[in-house]
Amino acid sequence: MNNTAKHLTAILGAALAAALLTAVPALAQNPQQLGKNHAHQRVAVSHRYLLLPVQDREDLATIVVLSDNRQVQSINVRLAVDKVDYFVPLDIERFGAESLLLDITFHGDRRYTGAMKDFICWKEMTQTETFDTANREAFRPQYHHTPSYGWMNDPNGMFYKDGVYHLFYQWNPYGSMWENMNWGHATSTDLIHWEEHPAAIEADALGTIFSGSCVVDKKNNRVVAFYTSDGRSQVQSMAISKDGGKTFVKYADNPILVSNQPDFRDPKAFWNPEIQKWNLILAAGDEMWIYSSDNLVDWTFESTFGKEYGNHEGVWECPDLMKLQVRGTDKQKWMLICNINPGGPFGGSATQYFIGEFDGHKFTCEQKDTRWMDYGKDHYATVTFDNAPDGRKIALAWMSNWQYANQVPTKQFRSANSVPRDLDLFEYNGEIYCGVTPSRELRAIRGNAVKKLPQACEIVIDLKGGPAEITLSNPIGEQVVMQYDTENRTFSMDRTRSYVSFSESFPCVTVAPVRGEMKQLRLFLDNCSIEAFDAEGRMAMTNLVFPSQPYNSLKVTGGKATIYEITK
Image (cartoon, rainbow, N blue to C red; front, side, top):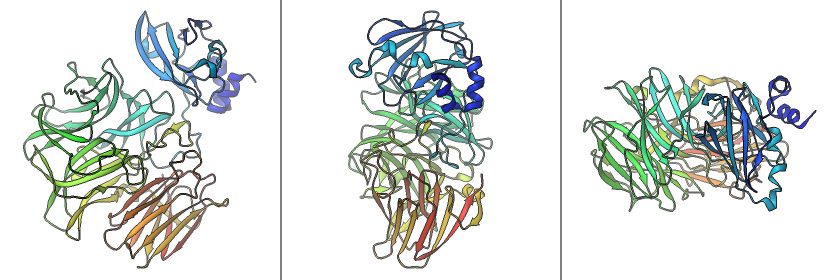
């Protein structure tokens, strides 16, 4: 079996590899070496995809795709030098050309990688009609949203319309590390089962596509997306969908907002019925800027927020602003979500929030302390769905941390989103806090109670009123230990004895305050994550775990556990 056959068999499976090998032609010619780091590769287009061989430990190479002497795409890929980790597909049929020229620049040091002519990527670049995305990763979650392949970070542009939830996300389809930001797209009718779609908004001359939001503009029967174009500067752009979010057309006069602030991004727009205008909040350095508009195009600067509040150890990102009911009262308050990196309570990235009042022009904070929405280490870029049914504020978070997100032990994909959570407010000791409750849609996948611990399950623990300890373990001694301390009213999760060797920043003990007595604990386990919730929504903790073998043992003291299998 030749090298191509071996790699295709490993990546795509024997049957598919065999089929592809009979149909994949060689490239049109050998690469033309133009310098130590520069080459041209001519491609005669005969199939839809060009499979690019990737080696994660290598430096990036820039591939500029030329058609009829015009640049039609530019991407950065870690092209394989001496070993293929996996393949990623480049859609070459979309350009409508019989042949393409790849202008390739390698950015690595030749002293360490050898002569460019000997790189294995030249032999392994092949063409195919299909690209297999079947799961080949032990740690891919079973009921959390993940990209079918490639890297994912922040959830973007989430909205609900005509019975469908739309989720967009920061996506690199050309590798499993951060790069080449586009908006990936998935849809769901139940927040659990997601159907993947082609990239919704792709890079252009203004830059790659960073985070943002969508609004359902009911008056004009359209969906409008706002996003950051990240080029020489960060500017705000918009795109319009007239087919319910399936496709978007970029606004011809982008950008719509500019600034001399270097970190100027992540616009979150929403309709404010109290002033009968649109509001938009975005992150600028380590504060938030607020705007208003009548037409979603022309924006008036209103105010800033943040200089004297919260944590400022890192850059503020991914804001959200909403009005919420305080449980059991007739009071309503505004909550401003602010994601920060670094500066989280246990290092790296995290989500903080502020409670106060908002008059459409200025947000006034009523708290003095820093408050975290989730006390795990893997909960970031939290935002909510626009136009969610029944007035709900449903949030998703990126389930990772920038300290090690590029190093977690997966390759076919990297990163997942959290389970959906409903946000509200509750009062404790005269203060108002954010409540975080697993969305009711998760009840629909709760299956039968079982004795044996599955890799994907929900564990409900009825606490007995005193301290409690929950231990998950496997046969080789790896474990995660959770403790409920009734004296100090805290909940903790210790993953230091789980598999942690890929990053020095990964081992940690995370600790959350529990505001009030916790009577029931809900744990959502998936192949690489544990999400812990007070059943009444007064504590949330999200942590990744990567056990060398699945946890198959559960030990509980101070409570009674019921294990429910997940039925997808």
